[in-house]
Image 1 (cartoon, rainbow, N blue to C red):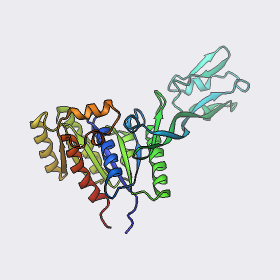
Image 2: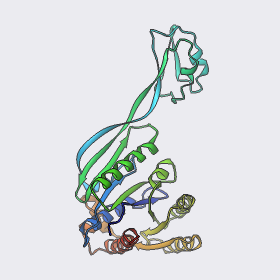
Image 3: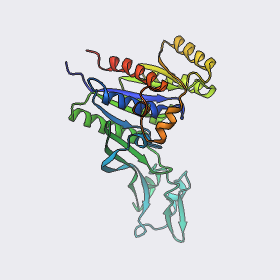
Image 4: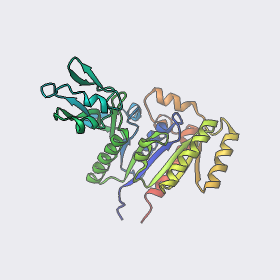
Length: 303
C-alpha cells in the first residue's frame, strides 16, 4: 500500500543542540536503507540555513521572495503638506526641503501614510527580502532559502520552502519531507511545525537546554503535534539527562534515543559529511541508526 507524503520536522528549543547534524544523518540513513525511503529535504532555518554545508547540494533553481511592501513618495505629486510625517509612528518620513522622502530602513510597511496622503502621492511597493532555492543533494532534493540581513517575514519564507518541498514530493511520488527546523519557539518554528505528522526534538542536557526543551514541548503540545525527544551528548551531564527523561515522563512524551558525545561528529562536519556516512560504527552513528529505525516505523506504518 502506497503511503501518503509524511512530514517529519526536527526541532530544538535552542540553537546548537545538533539538530542539523541529526537531520543530515537521518537523510543519509533514509537514502541508504533497505529498502530506501525517498525523502525531500527542507531547510526551514531561513535565517541561517546550514544543512547544505553537509549535503553539498548542486543548485538548480533560484527564486526571489517578496516579503512585504514599503512606502515610496512620488516627488512629482507630493505637495509638501507634511501629513505623512505627522501620521508616521516610526519616524520613517523625512523632510527634504519642501518635499518628503521615506527612509526604507525605518518604514514598517503599515501604509498609514498612504491612506492619509491627500494627493495620493504615496504608494506601497513590494520588496524582495530573500530568495529560495531548489537543489539536488547526495541524499535527495533540497529546498532551502536565505533571508536578507535585518529583514522580517521569515515565517512566510519558511512556509514557502515547505510548500515547494511538498509539491516536489507529491510530483515525484516521494515518501517523506524531512524538515530541518529553526531553533526556538517563534514564528519560524511554528511555521516549520505546521502540518507536520511527527516532530523529533533534539535536546541537550544543560540548564538552558532543559529550560528550552520544556518551551518547545509546550508549543508542540499546544498545536497537538505528536513529539518525540532524543538527547544529544547525553553522557556529558547525566543529571541533566535524568531531568529531561523525568520531564518527558510527566508530559507523556517518549524519549526515543540518547546520542553520546562523540568526536566523530566533529570530524564528519569538518569533512562535510553526515556522521553516519563518515563512520557508521561510531557510537553517535549507532545511536542515530536506532532512532531512525523507530522513526521509520512510525512514519511509514500502514494507515
